Image (cartoon, rainbow, N blue to C red):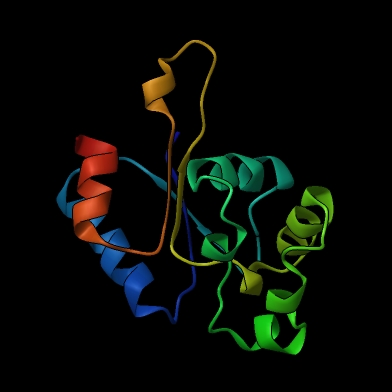
Length: 127
């Protein structure tokens, strides 16, 4: 199942949802602030991003700056880092698109993308 975590006041999130609908791609939309991705989902996404923690973060957000998360990225354990993000959806870059690997499916079925770039989403989902 394809899941898209969004924030209602985010223009990029609205464009992403509109793009998915135009492509006739089935997905489930979840509010990232009310229902943040789980640690397991964040771990899959981190892998999809090549382990680059900063790419998973909403670096322009007030919570990111207030918690000084940028200064801690290199020193937090992976479990601590993912736990903090799972506890506060404001820390996560959005939109957050995930279709995790399912054992019955091909590994190519896994998809993980943050931020909205229609070209990257086209390549990841239709590519």
